[in-house]
Amino acid sequence: MRLMFAWALAEATVWPIVPDFLLIPMAAANRRRFHVPLAAAVTGMAVGGATTVLVAYRAPRHAWGLLRHLPLVQEQQIDVARGHLAAHGTAAFLFQPWSGVPSKIWAVVAGAERPNPWLAIAALVIARSLRMALLAGAARLLAGRFTGAVRDHSIFLAATYVALFSFGLWRISQPTRQASTDSRGGMHPPGAPS
Image 1 (cartoon, rainbow, N blue to C red):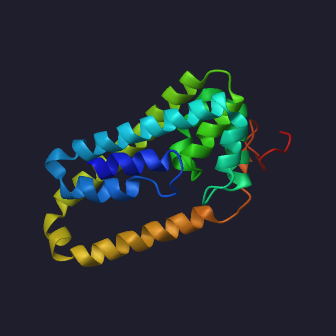
Image 2: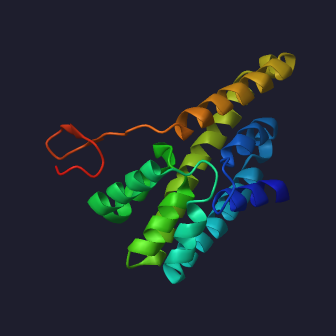
């Protein structure tokens, strides 16, 4: 579980690969105690996320400089996080786990540009914990339901899992113009007036 904690801590600060990559197979393999890797992931993510927000709050120039040099961090992702936080405040963190934008970006934006880092930390931890719990629970249930297939085809399933995860990581790392919905239901690019 130390690896799970360290991976989640690292991803919330500097590492580019989400802890879910490790959490899902651990939860599937250890169905009776799937809460153990889940707790390690949530704790590591909470410590790392809080650290990132607080560093950005106390030393925003340093945090921005470091963030822009991390792998898989793009200006467009920073714009997406800024736009959602400006439009929706702390509630925007509920979107973060599903946005494809790394949490460390949201954490730096919130720490550097929002007045209350503690509210940002709480919202970020709650939102990401929910995603982790949903994914770990789904992995546990599916592995239990298809125990024979998982056992009989474990090499194929592992290779497929790594390939799909790698494709998803590649896909969200590609620069794209993401559109968001304005209050009238229309689409507009981030930063454009509504």
